[in-house]
Length: 180
Image (tube, rainbow, N blue to C red):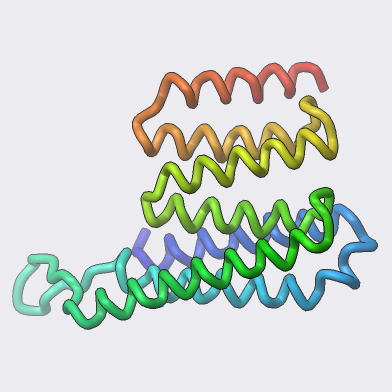
């Protein structure tokens, strides 16, 4: 799968999750439509800005991979900083709607995925822990949405070479599934 296809797939996954959270509470749709559009724009910016750093070009005269130019890398870093700032601002705005608002969880998930893509595993882990805490506080520790968060959190831990901890989260998710 090419780097553009991977980024497109990741964007679609994030957008589907955003839509699922918004649609899970019909009353939120009217309130959060404007914020949802903002979140989608941030996700598009994320995909296009990370496309510069995630993809390398090949030289037509050889099969060697040519790294991006320093100017392109600097632009990508600037865009990454802007995306992070936009995500953090969107989180702050979503927080004003209350911790039980599904949009807050959706934006936090997007922020966690941004950090994960940046390989800022500590930051991503802190955001996943917050997502887990919010969802447990809203729906209890055995809700089916907890399983989803645990799965993403476990994947992050595996990427960070923390397989033992990931296995514990996966076991917890499996126990919740079996209770339902």
